[in-house]
Every structure is written in structure tokens, then in C-alpha cells.
Image 1 (cartoon, rainbow, N blue to C red):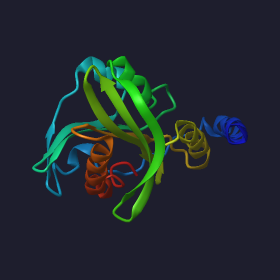
Image 2: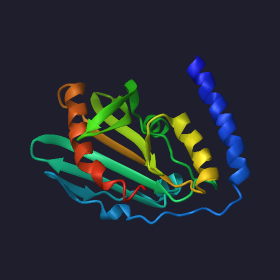
Image 3: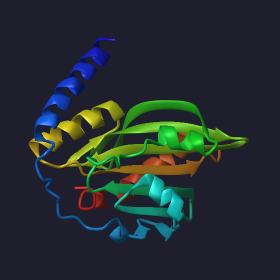
Image 4: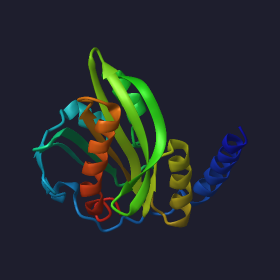
Length: 207
């Protein structure tokens, strides 16, 4: 309860700082496009899957990849990474917690945890979702402005602070999904292995 109150107070303070700096022109960082993310990742081979125009219009992204990665000894992983150059004018990152239920997937379990990606520990949101008899495991996190965040409220607070301090509101969402072939722990292990291969390439694309 106290933590939530402190977080709410921080967001209010951040909003005031954001308002004071919101009129300043934004600084756009130099970055590689997401399309240059390697298709081959340590045994994983990716294939681009185009999103429909109406989906892209709803997302409002400036850059994205939507790929299905396959490996010989693991279930497939569906990767989506969306980048927003600016989140000042209403185009903001859509939380998977809102999008997945809209597609018919209901959460069976959800938690915020940390994972070790080859020596770099990052926070992630970790879900099991289900539609009918199908179950899938999900990792997602927010990345940008030299930061990885899982908590959505903290991400919004940092967004407002960085708008004032850095004149930047760019950022991205990274989401990886794999089927639960046997156990949730096995599926999460697959996502950890895949994320470890992917993560080194994200900092230059989500700076």
C-alpha cells in the first residue's frame, strides 16, 4: 500500500515536471531500424509476418518487427517489437495486458520477475495465457532511453521525467510468446534462451 502511494506521488511529481518541459522540441536519438535485427539468432531462424494496415493504424508505431523464430530443438517464438519516436501526441505503447484479452486470450497466471540474459538481469512481465485448450507463455518489457522497465506505471513516470530532462519520449515494447508444449517452466526457459540471444541487438534499435 505504501509503495503504491509513493509511486502515485512520484507520478504526480513527474507530471508536473513533464508539463514544464513538454513544449521543448524533442531530441530523436540515432538508431538502427528494427528491420536490421538479425533473422538468425544463435540457432533461431526468423521469418517476418506482416501486420494488417488496420492493426498498424491502431498501434501507431513508427517502426516494428513481427517475426516467427524457429529452432530445431525448441517450440517457435513469436516476437513483436514496436518503437515509438514520440509519445507526446497520443501514440503510446499498448500494453499486452489490454491487447491479448481483446484477441480472446485470458491470463491464467501473471507476475513481474527478473531474468538473467547471459549476465544482464532485466525485469520482465511473465504470463501464461489461454484460449480454449491452447496455452502460451509470454515475456514482455519496455525498453528505451537506456532503460529496461517492466512496471507500466513506472514506465509512464520515467517517460514524463525523461521528457523534461532529456526532451525524449521515444521508447519501445518487446514481447515474446511461445506455446506451452509441456510445462510453463519449460516454456519460460525457451523464452529466456531466446531473449538471451535477442537482447544484445536491442540497445542500438531501442536506444
